[in-house]
Structures are given as structure tokens and as C-alpha cells.
Length: 312
Image (cartoon, rainbow, N blue to C red; front, top):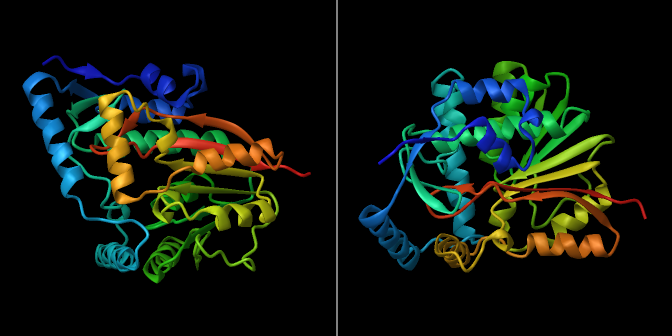
């Protein structure tokens, strides 16, 4: 099978921008990383499709249950132990749900990357672009559902003078974020925060941006309280990098399987629909919605939505 290369032009198309809008740091990261892949076709594709369907049918995981809280607490505890044991190796902060060495989704096809870390490396480029493009003008940046803090590490390196806040609903995440800050001297602080039952007393400061990455998906569609909290707190910008079921094409078989997987596990639905309702009510302004047409074996987790509350 012929190898293809995911180029700077392809990244620009995925992000919904012109090539000239990609920063030099992103271009440098792309040029030094292997983004070659082969499209999976014929018998190999059929075998992969069958395995995906079997996975969807047999999968028992349910989002938003009490058992999942224990899983997250244990998972981030493992990252914390590995981080401390390694004397602060930042590679130990990569969440284990970003898997290596497997087929991925690209432009509504399954492909096999040459680089086993293609998914993580793609996200690294995307994240760097988002942070460069949208977060440079804010004094305070809040990540809700920060997990290991690996996004806050990148922000600390980009913007060492900004105030960074990592919020999560399990203590192990908060402890890990604070340990990162302690070991590296970065301006990050961790805080307990439940997005389903927000603490109204937790203040978002002036000239702030907030973002999520794969955390709204974990709310099992119980996002209204969090949205109301944001509307009251009035950050200047909100960015969500999340799987967004409304953006799939149900008439495409690859997309249809992602929809089935999304629904089977109970990931959040109708988040974008709710934001559009709020925009019609003149409460927010949606600045951009973009499906990246990129994702892991079972779903796309990297679409992005950018909006801001309106003063009415």
C-alpha cells in the first residue's frame, strides 16, 4: 500500500484555516515529526470494521457512573506515582487513553500510521495551534477536567507569566497538578471542581479564558449546570476540544460506527445543540465550530467549539 503524508496543508484544512495561519512553531513541529500513513482498504479494512463492531457490541463501560469516579481517581494516581518516581519526567503525564500503535480515523477513513504516536503528535500540533491562536491575550487560563495537567504543562512553557488553574473532580488530579507546579516552579494551581455540580463560589477572574479537553464528554450530557456557571462567571473566551456527536454524518459508515460507540458508552450529547440555543437567546456568541476529521479507532475526540458569553 502506498504511504501518504499528512502535510502542513492538510493540517490547515483540518483546523479550518489557511496555511499562513499556522505558526512557525507548529510548522517546525510538523516538519520534525513523521505523519506518514497508509489507508486501510479491502480485506484488511473489512477485518478492522468487524473488530470495531464487535467492540461496540461487547463494550460494558458506562460514562458518568460512580464506578468511573474510582477509575479516574486510580488512573491519575498512577500517573502521579510514575511522575514522582521518574523525578518529574513530563512524558509520564500523557493520559493512557491516548493510545499508540493502532489504526486511527482520518478524513472518514481508517488509516495505519507509520509513527506509533501519530495520534498524540497530531494532538500536540493541534493543541499548540489553539494555544498560540486563542490564549495569548489572557492573564488567567482555566482548564476544567485537567486530568494529568499535561495541557497546562504546555501552557506553562508557552506563557510562563500567566496564571494557570487546573480543575478536576478527583483529588489525585489536583495533587498531580500541584506536584508539577512544585517540581518545576510553574505558575499552576490545582483545585477540586465538579462540573456537574459547580461550586458557584469558585471565581473566574477578569481577563480569563477557560477550556476543556475530553471532559465535557464525561458528563453524560449533564452539562447545563456547568454552562450556567460559565454564563454567570463570564470568562472572555471558552474553548472545548471534545467529541461532538452532532458533527458526524450518519450516512457515512465510519461515522455511523462512531455514533454507535458514542451512544453505547453514554458520552455527552447535544452540547453543541444547547450552545446554539443559547446563541439564539442572545446569551452567547459562537465564534467557531470545526470538526477536524481526525480521531482514534472508535471515535473522533478532537473537534473544537469556541464561544464567549455576551453582555445583555
